[in-house]
Image 1 (tube, rainbow, N blue to C red):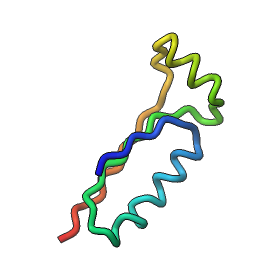
Image 2: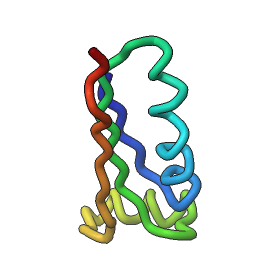
Image 3: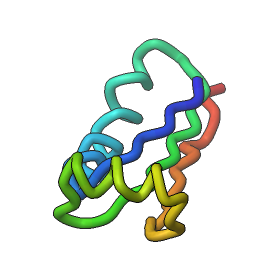
Image 4: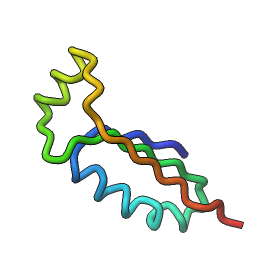
Length: 66
């Protein structure tokens, strides 16, 4: 399962919990997060419209279950 989040620190917090939640289901997981700390929805919208490269990027790829 691949998940992309575009958000702020709350999306980063959610990614910290998702691997544990999906582990029980046996899913392979790739989490990617584009974020700006404290960013508002309006700022995300304006960044998208102007194609601003203003985001930090993190990815989490937990080990596959055997």
